[in-house]
Length: 181
Image (tube, rainbow, N blue to C red; front, side, top):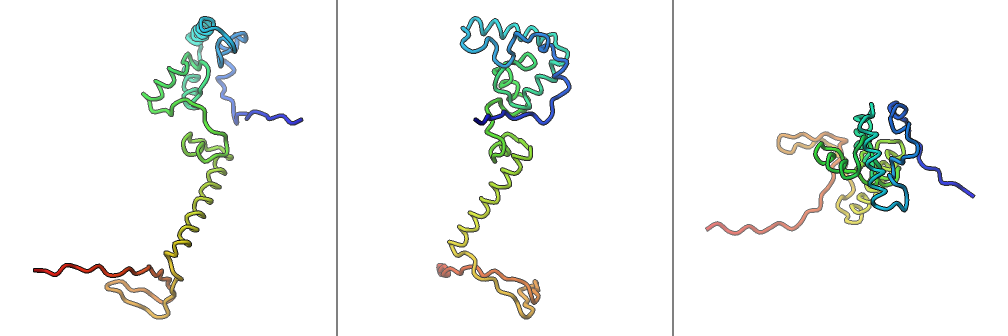
């Protein structure tokens, strides 16, 4: 039997150890009220979490951390999901939500995650995208075989020296210009 382990954060902020929520283990700040709670119970548990957060010495750091990580669930620094969504829009943070898994290009681009897994996923995606573009270009036969100049060539004021590559472009039929009256 194999266990799927959840992702361990790279570093835990120092303020986690001094938060007021540490003194209230019976309250669930991630899911106030717990599973299967009635709306009134959930609202009461959320209010209790907010009251505890109101006197917390690290409330601002907790709220900013929740905004920076786009936390979808729970009470962070006294802010619930709706509060974080409103504040994120007002102050330029990304909206809270469920980010895709680590190691994906969308997490790298849309969620600005720069962990090694996401960087590797982005690099893989970009290399595959570039290879697909090259295959499309080869299929269209846009570029011919490059020519290598043997002698210097002057085109207007530009001098092209021997050994340089020239990429021939396909030549289309000339467009007929209407005669001037």
